[in-house]
Each structure stands twice: as structure tokens, then as C-alpha cells.
Image 1 (cartoon, protein in one colour):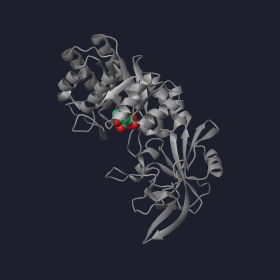
Image 2: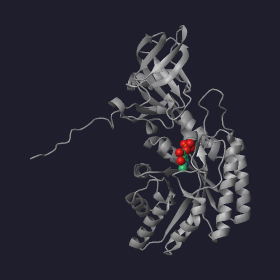
Image 3: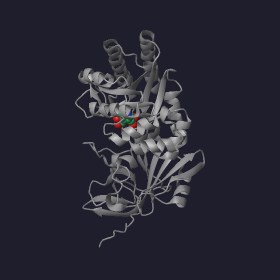
Image 4: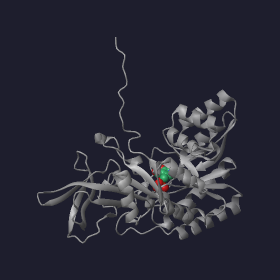
Length: 414
Ligand SMILES: Cc1ncc(COP(=O)(O)O)c(C=O)c1O
């Protein structure tokens, strides 16, 4: 968000560190995708990217359905007023009680990731006497290029390998009460090349076509994945969403012409929310150590681990700037957080105005995989508040100490 006056107002009211989410940007991204998609394709928002309940609620109000992966994501979605029948529930580590909760609740698109999960579904239908429709997540035999994080097409803990599908179909059909309504494939994420996602989609459609012919099963839905990325670093190009949508629409139309009507599901977390987020931290102190200039912030990688390059060999800086009005000398600076680890760096040798105590630093494109993908309890610093902004209005949508106050529980010992 470029409105520095508003950010200063938020900081004076709520202090730092802060996550600020701009709802206008989220709506733009939803429009980029959803408003041009083929009518048979439903867009789903992946809560793992940012499960802030108010944000999720607003996304859902814009016509986007929800994809959840855990009991708490599921319950968050319910709190947002979403009917289980509209939700997609997947994820590789569903415990028996999670599966039971989801099936009891009537999740519409329940995606099975293993033969063990199928057994639980069978047991549930035997115990309740109910029929149930499920989707199978398939790990394709064929690999793909162009994804920064591969979830399928190689050896992975996700889904059921394509060459194990015979067994899965047999096991699903053994009671006559469990019906395979759908397939789901997710090749990978952080993809910036529209052609890669289009060719992944083609591959998913091929798998679905082969599946229907081989097993004589008429699928009602097909999860075609997504993986739309956003450019974080210099030299990364924005995804061409028009080209992407046109390419997917064309493949989907052809599929429908061959196989008849079917519902397609596309998932996205990062693309919808990453660019809407700014992380704002304040300079607590500055120092020079052996010739290198350090700026210590009141925020760090415990709130935004990706900013420190967690999971990447090459540590690159996210877009960072300082809210400094007057002209100052420029200098390369290390932006460190308050953690007791040298890895707690949100920026390395960032060329910016020489920062001073009390200055504000803004890290952009932090709306996805911030708090959800960071070691928030490390060193027990307080969590950032989260603010949702629309136009010149805003609202505190999560307070900072909601999780962190430890409570001493009385232990009764003889
Ligand atoms: C199955 C599945 N769906 C959706 C997503 C969301 O990915 P992204 O936030 O990059 O859109 C992921 C990410 O890991 C995933 O594994």
C-alpha cells in the first residue's frame, strides 16, 4: 500500500509490528482471475496462505469458495458463514477424527490423499450407513517444469500415485457406499509462466480423461490445481493472468465438448493475497559491526520467515522501503529482527536511506504465508496486529496477544 499517511496513522494507533492487508488489491486479484474464468470453473481460496477470518470472510463474499486443510481451517471457514457443502477439504495428514468431523459436517469436496484415508471413509460410511462422494488426489506419473515448489509429478507425500489408482478405485468401490465423484491434481506452486500452468492443466485433463475411460466412472468435478505465483524479487515477471485464463478456458471447453459437463476447481492462495500485504516494523536500534551497518527492527522472521529466505538457498530481499520523508544519505544496511539467531534478517545489504531509531520500514507483498508460515513463538515476542484496509477505512482484524499470553495452569499434586 502506497498510502504512507494511512500507514503512519495505523502505526500511531496500533503500534508496530503490523500486517496491513489492502482489500482493494485482493478484490483486484480476484477479478483478474475469477471474472474471466469459464463458467464451469470455480475459484477456491486456500486458507493456508492467510487464514485471517475477516479476510477469508471478505474473499468468500466475493464469490470465491474455500479450500481448507485442517480442522482449524475448516472451523474458521464455518465461522465465516461458509457451508461445508461448498468447501474443498484436502491435505495429507488428516486424522480419523478430522475425517469424521468433515464427513459428519457434509464437506462437499472431500479429497482423499491415501489408501489409509479411504479406509477411514469406508469405516465412516459403514458406521453411519450413509453414502458418500469423495475425490481422489492423484500424484501424476509425469513430472513438470517451471514450478518453484513441486507438489506432484515426483515422489511426494501428497495424493495417491497414478499407478496405485487401480487399488484406490477397488478399495473405494468395495462397499458400494463410497462414490468417486472427483479427482484432484496439484502439480506445484510459485509459477510465474502462464504456459506452464496451462500445460499442467492439460496434463490434469488428460489424467481425468484416462481415468473416466479406464474405470467407467463419470466424474462430477476435477481439481485442476493452480500454483499462480507473484513476483517477489528483481527480475521476476508478473504472471500474465489474461493469457492464463484464456488458455485454461480453451482447454476446459475442449474437455467439456469431449466428456460432457463437469465442474472444475482452481485453487489459489498466494496470488490472491500476497500483493495485498505490507509488514510494517519499527527501528529499535542501529549499530555498525565490523564495517557492516545493522538496523534492528521490532519485527522479524518470526512473523515473516519467507522474508529471511527460509527454505531458499539463495537469500534474496523482498521489496523493502522506509517511510522516511526527508533526504538522507543512502547506504546498504542489514535489516535484522529481534531474534537470537543470525538468520533473523529481513533484508540483506538493502540500499536505503540511513535508518534511525523510530523509523518505519515496510516490506511489501507479505500478505501470503506470513504468520502462517513463520516460527511465531520463537523468543516469545508479541505477534503483530493485523489490519484490514479498504479505501481510507480500516479495521483491526486480529490483536497481537490473542495467542501469546501464556497461562499458568494449576496442577494439583498430592
Ligand atoms: C494442494 C494445494 N492447494 C493450494 C495451495 C496454495 O498454493 P498458493 O498459495 O501458491 O496458491 C497449495 C500450496 O502449498 C497446495 O499444496
